[in-house]
Structures are given as C-alpha cells and as structure tokens.
Length: 285
Image (cartoon, rainbow, N blue to C red; front, side, top):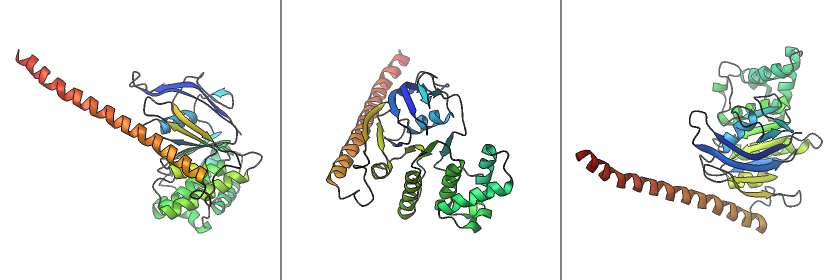
C-alpha cells in the first residue's frame, strides 16, 4: 500500500516551459484510498496521472510516492489506459503474461498463464478468450483484459485513465462494480487507486476521495472525502439526499469552470480580432 503526496506540484512540458499545465497541486492521498479526479477536458487530470506513473518528469521535491521521489516508471505502479493498451499482435492472454514476465522473471510460462487465467476469471472473462487477438474482442472484453493485467501485476498503486469512457452504459456499470468489488476485498493490502473520469456519478460511486481540478494552469479547487458510513452505493446513488446535494455541487463547480474557460476564450478571440485592423493599418503606413 502506497501513499502519494503532492507538494505544490507544478508542471510544464519541456517543449513549452512557459505554459504551465499544473500550477501548484497540494494534497496527500493515504494508503488504500480510491481517488477520482474530476475536471473539464484539458485541465491536467491525465497529465497528473502520467506524472505519478513516471511517464512524465516532475520536480523530485514536489511528488512523492511512498515517501520517495518519482524517477521513472516502476512495476509498483500500473496503469490502465482508455485505449486499452493491448499489443495487437499478441493474444489477449499473452498481453497479461508478458507483463507478468517483467515482474516474475523466475516463473515458468505455465505459472504466468495460471495467474493470468485466475484474473481473467475474476473479470468474468472466459478461458477460451486467452488465445483471441484483441481485434477479435469487444471493447468491453479488451478493457477487462487491460484491467485483469493491472490487477494480476498486484502493484500497490493503480492508475486508471478514463478506462470505461468508451463503453456502453451496461458494460461500464458491470466493470465499475467489478473493479470496486476487487479493490474492496483487498482489506489488508488494498491498492491505492487514482481514477480519471469526466462522470460525476462514476466518481460518486467509486471514490473514497474526489479531487476536482480547475482549468489549466490547474490546481485542486475542491475535495471531498467519504467515510465508510457516507460512501454511496449503487442503491443510494440516486436516493440519498446528501449524495444528490453533492452531485449538484460538483456539477455546478465543473460547469462554472467551463463557463469561465469559454468567457476567457471569447475575450481572447475578441482581442485578436480587434488587433487585426490596427496591424493592417500599420502595414499600410
């Protein structure tokens, strides 16, 4: 179980150092928490996930995982991508086994396959799908394989970047329940999870902690922590008045950010349009 601490985390991409994506993220995530990141598109949610994963480089003093600076990718941190991240030339089962080979180098192929099949079963995947290529699977099946691979690696920290965003409502609900159930069962060594989503309802259902990021350059503008007694379930998601109030509050905060971004974009367009006649006049002189 890993904790994660952001200490005034700032980030800009190396090719555009003057444009901050994150402008000072401050928060400590406790071991075993399920954190959902909310916010409008482009606010830095996925960037924050990539920094935790070590796929982007952060200031060593500003991001600590289990008390240590993040220096690069690690098998202690596993990631589930929105586009599944399965190698198309390998069978779905081989996609799990190749990841296990990196962690368990001394295991036999039979041992790796046995663990892969176990997690396939945990994700309601039939054994016969092991030898199917990803292109021959449905979107829901591909995402189940990606999730099974992440759980099979048994990393203390799991990062999930809108993993169910492209799925139909029924498949999405089934996978939400499956992931929540698998995470909840790990009572002693429960994984710390970061989950990026655009869905307020998905965050309410899954999270122990909800973090809302403002528009870029972004920082955390709102947080909410659920106790075991107040955490919503699928049964209370639409019936509990406190959950309804929180849903409205989160939706309002995000919509206000969207409106503010639209206002700034409009002002920028108007300013640019107003400058064009002056530039043309200057050239004529």
